[in-house]
Length: 146
Image 1 (cartoon, one colour):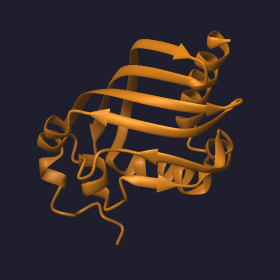
Image 2 (cartoon, one colour; image 1 turned 180 degrees about the horizontal axis):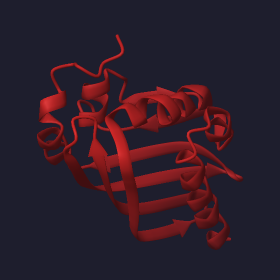
Image 3 (cartoon, helix red, strand yellow; image 1 turned 120 degrees about the horizontal axis):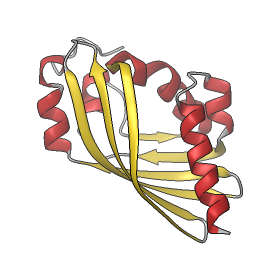
Image 4 (cartoon, one colour; image 1 turned 90 degrees about the vertical axis):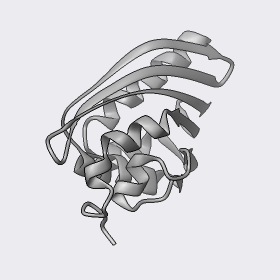
């Protein structure tokens, strides 16, 4: 039922915010994938891939890397959620305070493909130009881990 799929995605989003890598990883299938646009601001600023493969890699990113760029006041406003079969489409606006103290606000569309109550694949879309403008001061590689 579509309501169950929406509930699964909303639950996963709450777990993402927990910062607990094991709990986050458990929301994904072991071979899950998360695909974002190449050269998106988060991947560039943190020096991480835009295509992550595996529950552990995705969990580690959400628990450890994401908070290095979006350091506080992270809020997600779901503007629309639609489910059909095993697919859930989420439109949202995310706002946060960046590592340099500046504000970040961007609109996203995420397509979640589920396998039962776990996420098998996420395709993430956003305004990459807007995102890069907002993290411009951080794009010199200062946050990169490697």
